[in-house]
Image 1 (cartoon, rainbow, N blue to C red):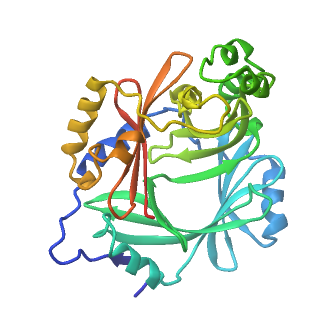
Image 2 (image 1 turned 90 degrees about the vertical axis):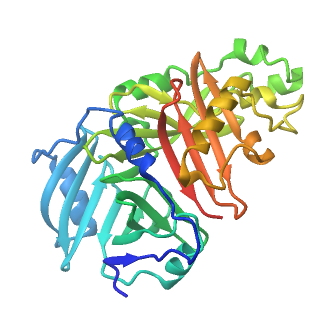
Length: 354
């Protein structure tokens, strides 16, 4: 069983998973930005030096500017193997290494039991990320299902899918991001006492606990290079010093296209000890999305009828910007997380097994 091409068979008698709708969704996502990761041989020497420090005999064949003056992608061969590193001005963020290792039998066995079974696995690579204190390795594959490609990741605990992309990297430095995104977050990196005092669900003691905290504090960003060369930025922020919120999505031009659940703070009880998990969707919104999900075969078994799925369906609002987020589980605890903009168009999604 070779790593480069493996089909995961359908279970006998099971329903074929139809994901044609996601072809349109991936196209929509890939149009988030027209900013290209342009080929550029004028990458500064310090970026090449950073690669050679870790891979002394690397034969660099291609370089690209991902963020002008900030982030670069270098492709090279090292000891006969193809590598690709993303670096910023101070070090390596991510390195991808192609591998001929066999697809783990444990992955094949796990896929055979999941709602996403039936796809073809190829292009096994090892992605090593350095944004944390210690390097973290991840097995990554291309996964093609009904003719459409996704990125599949696998570890001992779960299988995950996300929209197909050329590459991705994470950074903990806000300086690596476009100026417009930096400006958006930094302008809110200050206390917002008027908003805190408006939270009638909190008592005075709880308000005083957060009133001096900055509204938004940058934590990290995942940057995705999409199939057409455009980019999007998934930001994680600390909100009022009270909670970390991930998935704040900006396109490559720095325009906001999705906000996570900022207004959950209005569902805390007086002293932050209990959060009410109650959907805030209107009846018309519920009916719209229930009908939308019912018409998508890939969501068979994932719907809004169960109480847990209903309670995890939420309209997110921040400064008059509106989004919708749904975390839909089936009876096996597999999950589709679906993110829609104010116009109810899907802008991001992910799948994960338990």
